[in-house]
Amino acid sequence: MPRPYVVLSVAVSVDGYIDDLVPERLYLSNEADLDRVEVVRTECDAILIGAETLRRDNPRLIIKSPQRLAARAAAGKSAHLQKVVITGSGNLDPAAKFWHHGVEERRPLVYTTDTAAEKLRDRLGDLAVVVSLGAAVGFGALLDDLGERGIGRVMIEGGTSIHTAVLAAGLADELHLAVAPLLIGQSDAPRFVDPAEFPGGSRRRMQLVDVAKFGDVALLRYLPKIESDGS
Image (tube, rainbow, N blue to C red; front, side, top):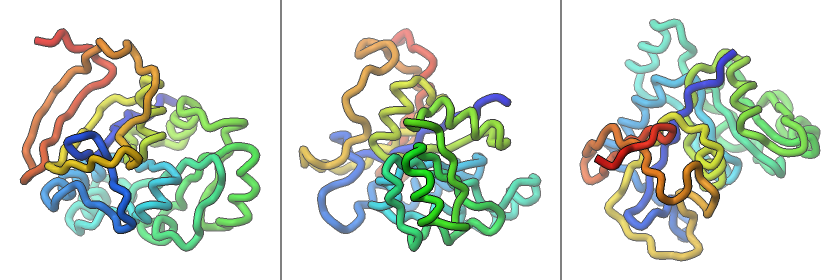
């Protein structure tokens, strides 16, 4: 089976951060942009986050609109997306919203390592399907497994280590970068990506295919696998 088409989605401040150091959650998007994100989710089969995002944001990752849920059902799709989380440590809270909302049709998938798999099965029980990928979580193997499960399009929503790994491995087909009119300015706050060796290095230009405005948020849509000539 082919690997899923990968849409990498992230909201950042003007200075490239995805959060600040205040305990309360920082909302970079506005209502118009959050609605756009739900439209993109509706078009996908699965949604993927990292363990740190799950712990920090405690997201539900559901489609809220009844009309969009009905449209998915009419198209023969499950109402909600297949949820996916990646963890190396296995430190996931079974009380998190992630496991208890929008999972009526299928349990979330947890991709992990051999050493953490049994710990997760004991901790999560019937809340999730735990999949071990060996000594380390490789994103190529993960996408292969999702493809075998019939996932054709996956939306990845962070966090930093996930964005970095996917882009460094050249696995993102689209990058949706929503830029909020905020300056974080905290050097220890999480950024969009960490330092890494990205395909083509610092001189390679990705192809920009769309620029849109959602209230005070600017959306830039790139095709990372296609190089731009800069024109």
